[in-house]
Image 1: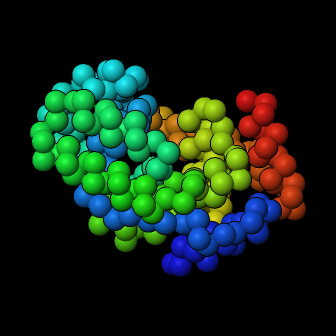
Image 2: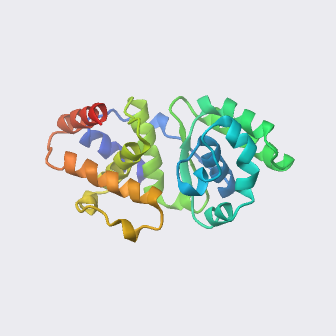
Length: 226
């Protein structure tokens, strides 16, 4: 699968401009992505139980997180995310003020410096080596960049991730996967259940629309209303 071709086709389907220069990717070690997720304030229970809601709490609790069973568990699964240079300076500050191992601090600072060099304005995709081969994950992260570069972002992470999840399926002609309301008991994590639940909500909202302009209008109206 050619990720850029799928992204370009999606742009036509939702009446957004395609700019190839926006989409940058950094392949890095999995632990760096997990730590960045924590520092960013990821709401998944595996992260939030270690109180990552404020900068002060992140500084205080990050070492508890990386020595936890949750961190070890996260290391076992492929990782992909989006990050950006505008947040790198305050993230570096958190890392430097924390009690992390000095070598890990150095690695994280180097990581954020690379992000700052690559990111033009709207963020870059970060993936580990295993996920770099997973084109669907790469497409998902690029769709985040597509939407943010067009000022399309819901204030709720559930609606936002649901939209990106739905559009990823839509770009791959798999949107019918979201026709049915997902069953919660089939998901190990409430966090990822919400991705699919809100993708279903977006499918219901967009499935009858034919014109790309109408799809884009509906997305913007939905974001304003919910």
